Image 1 (cartoon, rainbow, N blue to C red):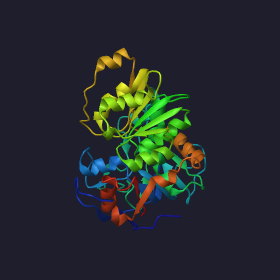
Image 2: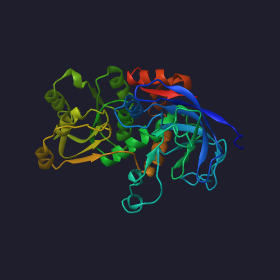
Image 3: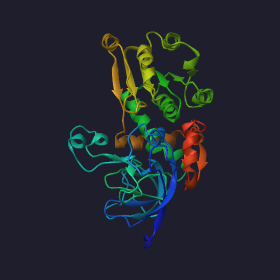
Image 4: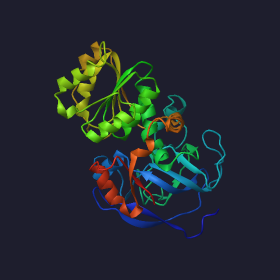
Length: 368
């Protein structure tokens, strides 16, 4: 299937933080070497999309957002024949791909095994709409999968709702639970039961945790946490910090939690999280993505308790494979399809963003 000459595709674009989204047309060309042209099936709104739109984190404008994307292959550029597992790719295949792409090999990639932090790394939904090839975000009709991305063909029995968050929310939490070294018999605390926290709870159970405690101020999310592997859910707003720490530690005998996962985005929760940990415990941060997320901690407590603190930003390509496999294998155990609970057309992006910002939906989906 070729790309017709003069083809134009719609993008939902905003010109400045908090500005309204407008539908604009940009040219669609045939994919170049190393590229894949995809017709977008669904793009879900990540919390970081909201932060970018609100101006809480830098993002070039006129902006096109969206990095949790799946789509159908329209055309394959030269050199792209198989996905990262070696499965052949063809027009019409439904795929997901890494939320980021890199300019090529580097010290970070070849020596440190951190391609996600390579110099020049860029992310879908993080570039100006005026930057060629224009279609590099999820809030549109088309998207180019750019060179040095990682592509996976999606199983036919996986729904769009189950598949779309895989390349961000799920893959990130695979990395988080790995970095927190969640393992058999562990007691795990999840700070925040939004999409990341729910996947974190499910993944912790999948990794063999004996106890998962979910913390969230929203009753509906605490209820959902019970369906995603939480054994106990607590409302941090209903008690003092000291009482919350005691409520967690008393359930994690004999000395506190083995691991704490911060996925709520509020640095103010970190001191309590540190206090919840046992001696030798591990703390992984994944939610405090905004610059200026400052917090004061008792460093002596980290030292005396031999604690490990780790940050997670992006993920390794292997985590994308593991994320897809986990969702596919556990779709009968956890109601992943229920997490995408709002669908909006491309001309409704503004409303979708406001609903997501107000937490009226857990994960809003743009379906062009």
